[in-house]
Length: 97
Image (cartoon, rainbow, N blue to C red; front, side, top):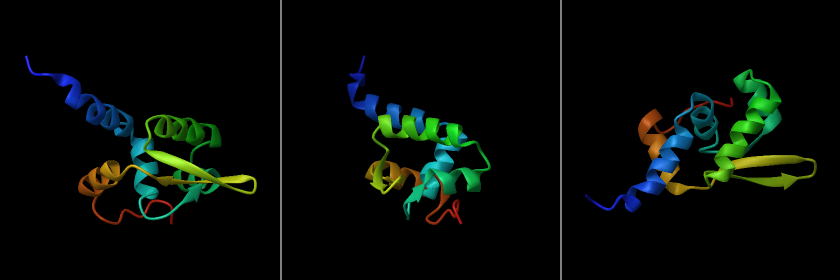
């Protein structure tokens, strides 16, 4: 049997992206930063739902937040994920417009 340790990180990233809301959030953050309030409005979801999904993405090292006053602006920090989502959805998905 082949050593599966080389597949653990890619599988972990794919699992984190395998939820429509998380995939949409990541797609929306590919080219710009955004805060939770704008995301919840664009996604038509409660703030708590968006925050829960962001927590999962942060825990997996996919996104990170930068505080600006009282708000946190999120961005995708994992380059592999950026490339993967671009392949899946195209180069310029406009989610948070």
